[in-house]
Length: 241
Image (tube, rainbow, N blue to C red; front, side, top):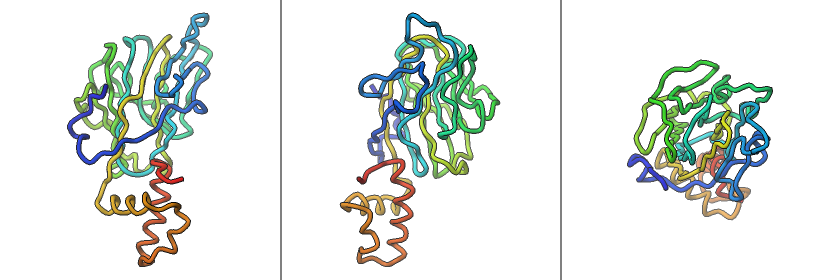
């Protein structure tokens, strides 16, 4: 169930990505549709560290929003959601129970204890949330370089800025130290940041392949914009084969 904020009901398009089976901790298991992640679920083993998982899409451009539902009550040292580069840590063992997202410059995270983390530093951002079925929305705007979180449809305010300067794709992330943590991906969407972007996307979407851009009967400046936009948009939206 989505608790999509009213800010995201107009002009947004459904986005399709899942948790990545090739980018996760050994202590994280995925459902068959890759929308649910289960941390530290082996009943024969206690949690021995911190486990993470990454989404299948990295974002370099545009505005993106997604929701993560916590299927069980939250407890333990750390359960987090956020974003990070492909260099962000996804697994720590040897009984290292830490706030994984935001431990260094490669990721930005929100803990269920209400703290936000980046570069190993934290500050209070909101009140803790422990309840089962809590839905956290993540709003990544790479036009403004900002990251904001929502709780059950209510905006919690600006968490981070400067993400447009990272210079690498940013991926959805989640992590946990606690046994039997269960998280489920919900609504995922993206938004055009300008009429120009909408037009470029429409042209590319109706092409059978992007190798023909240079043959279009358009001014070279427009063809160059299409080529540039293709490089920016395709890693995030993958709308063309």
